[in-house]
Length: 457
Length: 171
Image 1 (spheres, rainbow over the protein chains, first blue to last red):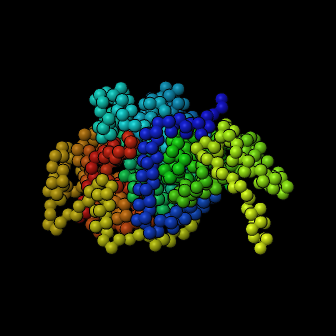
Image 2 (cartoon, one colour):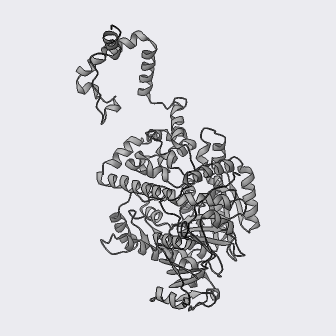
Image 3 (cartoon, rainbow over the protein chains, first blue to last red):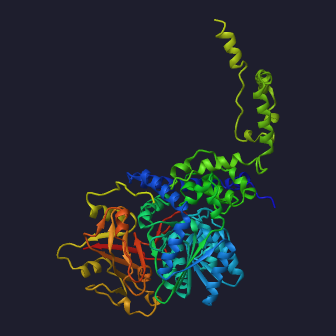
């Protein structure tokens, strides 16, 4: 099936003008909050530079750091699993659940488990998966995917959450107060937390030197899960490993400030050992990451710490919403990750970029997001996905600019455009004509004016 | 590994900065005055608190969390009073290393009081991580203010799944 292009999906998003404006403004506010926090730290730019260097260093010495991490984690009493792809990852999770005869799994937010399609897999095997982040839980109950990696339900209005909870949580009819609704979910999930024997989290960082896994949340959902259940499964991409706590100090200063404009997340939890009488399983997932290491044009995507700042600042994302992208991660980083995953499948997302490079300038680890999108576009013809109309036009222009006779004839004929009927100029083939006016051509070209007025003197 | 040699932020008055930033993240920080009774202060901060839990010596509490059999038994604790190790002036974080039988006390309590020594404040996270140490429990957490969410229309709600309020007492 042909995927819907970004432009068409964006059109759908924009048809609800009020929501679209709200989305744009709200994300811009988050960007503004990020700016305020950044301005409070005089060494902010140095931190970004350092974070970028540490990540580059780590991902280019990943063999060493992964081994160090795994050894340290096992010494701490954790069990380390290696998964080369999503299928292996999911099978390991299922196996752990089966070993503990668990039919329930309480999860905190993890983009990696989205990447691996873990939830549908587990449901099929009869496991009741409960997302515990409020936004993720709302989406799970609605049976729709996240539209932002940090604020997953950013596209949902409070009235819709109210209606959903009326049905699923038996809340008061017509009550859409965020505090009321949040507290209702608190109560509902409290029971799930207390009853679960296995809890799962993602990982923001894994520390090679000390073997601890670091998870950052605001809600305390990761900790409610992992402190109630005796078995903790961590799903962690191999690029999440960093050398030491010293290195971590750089990233935690950047993460929350960049993501939501907070000086820190409410909880920065370090899981070093299993609970007494419990188990800590760490699944290290490759799923294509080691292939990305060999791609020098796009290796920098592996530095990403998933803060979402590139989405909040992106003029296209803000005005088109997360669902306008065909890859499950939207925005500038999602365009790039989608291309790394499967270029022929996700190349249409490349059009969702104005090359304004705002993402580059806010990224806390200095991923060259805009440059990479540009490079992917340059390679579209090579994978047979260049736009046909644009190809014809480029070929035509090349011919024109290479032959001065043709060029001068074209310049001379250009003013005739002014006389053409609108219907012809703004026809279907002219995508630039949507929302734009063609400027009037001057009656006389610069060259002929120069020859007449200047050279004569 | 690149050398981390930063002239990182520091504050002329760490206590003042810590108190200020704690409030900005929805939490609270108070300094115990000379001669003030800590138990009186805690009661004045949380006059309506129901069942309290603490294993900190000299702190009044209804139950000792080290006596519970399971973490589930801590559900319903109204006020948890715990010992923190040090605070961070730049972001209001307090490093809490597990020192109770069930670490859920830090998250399941409706309200949380964290005690730290007044002279245990550092300027920034670089200094903080130089002090981070684990014990046999192998769990530690930087806590900055109460549990919160803005997942419904970006409206800030305090008290998502963890504590609805956090007060750090510097003594």
